[in-house]
Length: 132
Figure: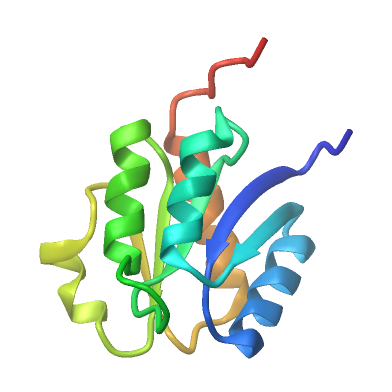
């Protein structure tokens, strides 16, 4: 059993996936990466507290569910779920489209910024309910 916190990452660019994976690993997190918003929603629906946070790109090429949609869905399941958005061009829409108490990282960002953002959100969130 791993002691690392599992983070759901939604990103469709392989290069960014690799950077995020390495950044999270270096920061003591474990990443589960999907490139589809729809797949992320399915994972959240069956997760039962498995994931501790969501890191999502806003613009996903495949499917109809973008990062805004995935984050809103996560917050329907858990109103305190930590969310970090990533975007190369739509960061300005965060104030109107993003969920409250989330963080936006404009691409390109330093790997340490991602770890810091997640740590800040996780430290501010109420403790996760234990799964039985």
